[in-house]
Length: 327
Image (tube, rainbow, N blue to C red; front, side):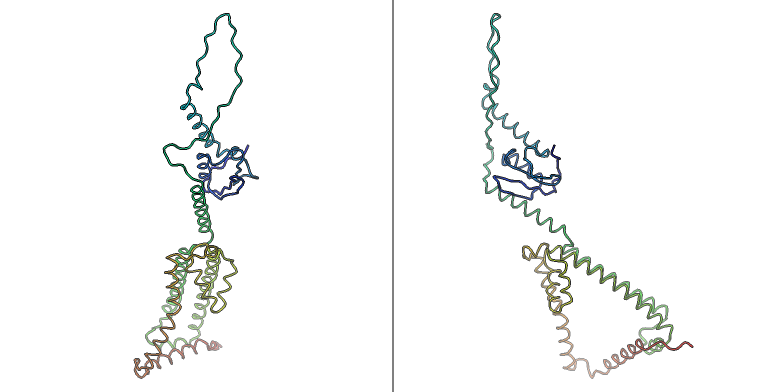
């Protein structure tokens, strides 16, 4: 006996006039049976739990629909010809023997069209079936990998948490050392001590570990997002190639699920694409604006800016200098 499958979310295939169609849900298969569009003998079905193509009438999940269809046909015949079903029995005389029973002649059961509703054409049936197949395909694409919204939200949350952790690490370090960030001279003197440099080294290693974890998680998220787009996972290597990383980043951020198959950019994708390329151009605009302002004298004579750069340079040299000898 064929195993019954009733899960409407599973994928089913069937043949109709020798043409294979699907995948569709088991509910839509039952709907086709109810319309008389699926012959129980000549049409075949195949789906989860079946090892081979099976006659539609032998599938347990479709038998109730076929039984209901047959009941409707019989009821319609009875309503149309009640005398043919309940014929009067002849009165027999006592001396007469009963006649032999007549041979069984099956009542023809033509396929009945709906009288109240307009008949559904084959073209309309094909449109409904195609819409169901497209809906199933889109749902399957969304179930694979990270969707666009999950990727953007997850990336934002990941980097926000990572930045907060690194800020806490260095903030705790400065609090333990009692540094005053406003006094650059005092900070430079404290940086010369071995204890401070060891603490800075430990904090730097911890911050680098957090950054490494963020990078690995980001790579996994990008690979999952490429799967959602219908692209090969190896495409994440394009992030290491200049200019090509802009192209692959655009697809990961803006394109909807299954973009590699249908190449259709929706409204949300167009908005995200605009923001993405605007963010790419923003640094160049800021650098150009700063250069123009500096060349036009907006920063004055540049003495304060030069002093700040010198302080930063001295701090960098202290960070790169070896630890003092403890002996």
